[in-house]
Image 1: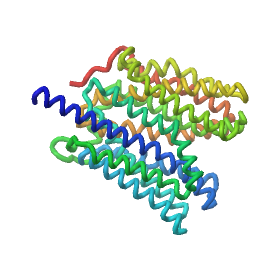
Image 2 (image 1 turned 120 degrees about the vertical axis):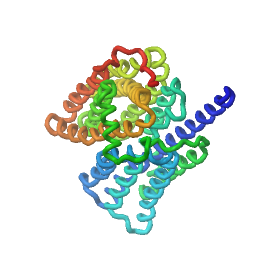
Image 3 (image 1 turned 60 degrees about the vertical axis):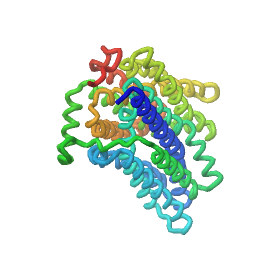
Image 4 (image 1 turned 180 degrees about the horizontal axis):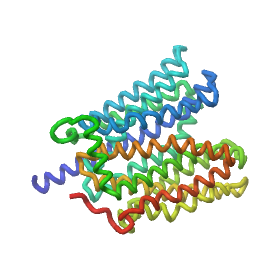
Length: 416
């Protein structure tokens, strides 16, 4: 291929990556509509108890434990754009059924459970392929750039999604708000259709060899690379602590600190804003520190700011929560970008979807564990002490990731 043809091909792939990022960003932002609307529908329209409302969220985590590993194998047997398109259209159809059922008077609680489970099943396939796309669309020296954009999409949904969802529920009603989520999925599907690059299936060479054989190959690959193992362990601890934090923080702010609902929402939004700041700065941090040091050093340096959260008091003491959350989550946004780049650079392309599936299985599975840990700590010691314990444990996540040769590297070596 000539030099000009290579430049044209790279420009097409970069354009396709931007379309992928834009579509996913919009769908994640709009996706907060169901996070707000489904619990309100369950409690207000269907008379669900607190426990039944909590099961709606739990139902969304269940597929990550059940189908993530098989999804890593089967998703690589189809062209990635096909998987992305099918999952977007499937999620749009599933979410749309809730407003339709509500309008016809047939909505039941089990419909909300089933909708969350089915949407999450499609999301498992989507995320595995989505996180495998940057190495296919970007040169290796732009991987950090790509992962920064992916992390920015997540941070923007956390920072601004709840506000958008709240206004949508307020003006359209909880029964119609999920249509915003439908629109987000359709935008993502449209962006996928506008992509030009034709990427083939990335399954195992020589055809399908069976689910367990292909998963075993990925597991053996990870097991032989202590750097990836340590990174997965650090990510798992971080996700466990994040779920425990989620289980405690609302009760802590509302009951122990006594903040009003509007202030509570602002404080929780600071988590997403901190992540957005970290994502914006991740590329510059990687250039200054090196791609390997950026995986763990910023998070290890800024994580102690999280200890300010359980010290929060009414009035001016709210700035302890605000500053602690901003700094802490900015550091962890850089950690997330670095961890994704690490796995992508050290994994052969044919193994990447299965390796991503293994990483997601462990890290997402720990969200279940973290929710139980947070609830248990809050029950035993109260929300304030429980939150303090969680933030202390969270300090160990970047140090676990650095317990391998990673701490000796400046940059992540490129897989040849």
